[in-house]
Length: 192
Image 1 (cartoon, one colour):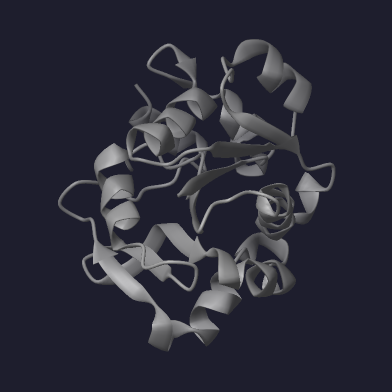
Image 2 (cartoon, helix red, strand yellow):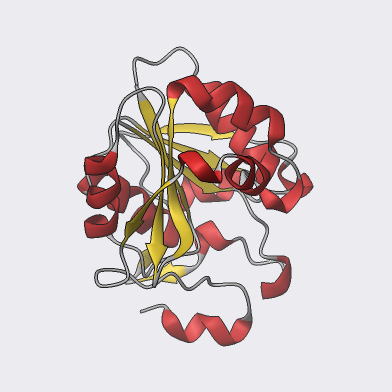
């Protein structure tokens, strides 16, 4: 089970502060998010950077992770998802768990639940909170090409997930995680 962390955003609503560099527990948020994937059972873990990628590489300890840079990061999450899936194309992974850097309330326990729900190369699962689909999302390797083809703008894989809702397994994680995003200056109070 590979992990894929999308961490390319420029933090437009945060005044242009890249989310990967936000301070969380004394370190860049990207480190926390990558560690959550690893601690939850993913390996290898791939990270897609974009905004301020060189600064992120300088400040964050990313040794042991595979890092790709999305030069088109401003086009939205869909382009980062495509870059990440392309980086995984030659891997032996049967599935990938896709996580977002700006959701520090989602920890290793939620990741582990999704990893346990994997059902091979055709798997399709997502964390749920009170029965509502959220992140992270798990895609079996047989789905990667179609997911990448449908990924666009800031919607990422939303269109694909809606089109394949009948095959999607929801894994309730509301008792072990909080799915809030760090999007606005007010949200920064959620970081420690």
